[in-house]
Amino acid sequence: MRLRLSLIAASIALALPAHAATTALHCGDVFDAAKGSLIGAQTIVIDNERITSVQPGKVAVTGATVIDLSGHTCSPGWIDLHVHMGQQSNPQSFSEGFRLDEVDFALRATAFTRRTIDAGFTTVRDLGGTITPNLRDAINAGTIPGPRIFAAGKSIATTGGHADPTNGLNNRFAALVGPPGPTEGVINGVDEARQAVRQRYKEGSDTIKITATGGVLSYARSPDAPQFTVEEIRAIVETAKDYGFTVAAHAHGDEGIRRAIEGGVTSIEHGTFMSEATMRLMKESGTWYVPTLSAGRFVAEKALIDGYFPAIVRPKAIAVGAQGMDTFARAYRMGVPIAFGTDAGVSPHGDNAREFEFMVEGGMPANVALQTATVNAAKVLGVADIGQIAAGFRADVVAVPGNPIEDISLTRNVAFVMKDGVVVMQQKAGVAL
Ligand SMILES: [Zn+2]
Image (cartoon, rainbow, N blue to C red; front, side):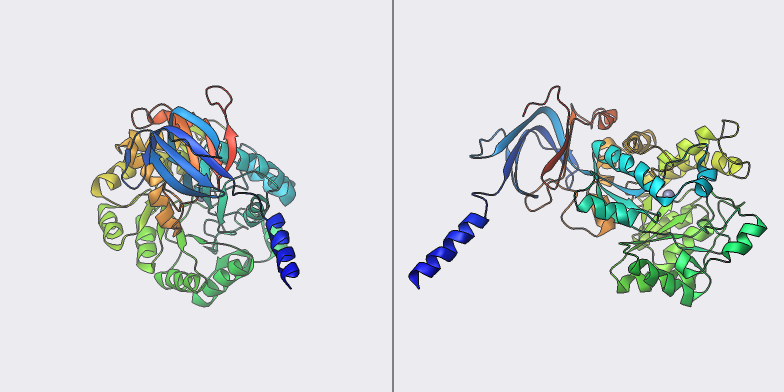
């Protein structure tokens, strides 16, 4: 009996590594996202995928792999709450849907996921794209590199609204494919609203996206018409809760934004034509505003190029691009809760950090802008263990040379990225292992 017990003990010892994988990051400075300030040089100790301690100064950690990031500021890995991993806008975008297969988009997307994480974004919320749940699974399995993804899958729209997949088809094609329904993400009425959410659950979504108003890059005239009733939105929000999902509402027009808030959504995406009365409502109800300034700037710029967008898109792109910055500046001054999102996929993947610069340009201090992509974004996702560098949190760390609070453009100069304790990217120059 004693012999048998000792044999079992020996086999257990063989099955476990000698000690957990420990890493020590010697950071020249650290952004404390909860406080919103830099806290000086720190040693971040990581065991496997989690931070176990953060100690002031350069502390020797026995048995640890040491990574020297002195001269750098370490921040919690950034979170972009609005991306579309399955696409990237280009002058051919409108015909590609007819010519390319989903596998073509998926192969391209493997480059986008890499660019996103190399830019320091360790977590993203993907708000619309049918291949994204598959990308998420491939990243989680270690097949391709990329950020942690919370995927909405197909956006939920109403007939003829933004994200109705048959908008712009000629009559012959429209007749061939037939009118889309809840399975395809198009609803009319509360029963179909519930069915569409349950369908997303079935398809493996993590969150729900609705298109509460018209949009810019679609074959529909109005960028701002409300496109759901409050009852439909409420049915979506209540059904989403059954599955632990939050709801993000794409919305440009004021009436659509107001209905989405009344229906109980967690975040308003874009928010372009939001009135001051609606801003007050956002503040009172604690609804998050995700401004996506990058997308507004990008489409307004490209609308000046002949032929880049179809004629129906061009005037919408100009109007929305001009308004976004102004709305953001007013909402920030009013104290609307703001979290970070770019709409990358409209703007180029990997350029996500430009959003920080646009926010600062709109009057937000750099340290607050960094909070929108860390602590605030984690709250929007409802995830308790990302968005901070502190014991118990997931070891998602991004390092930039110098002080990003003095010069926010340094966020585009990422030198080191770690996700879940694994080094994903490390520039050779200036960073020694
Ligand atoms: Zn979007």
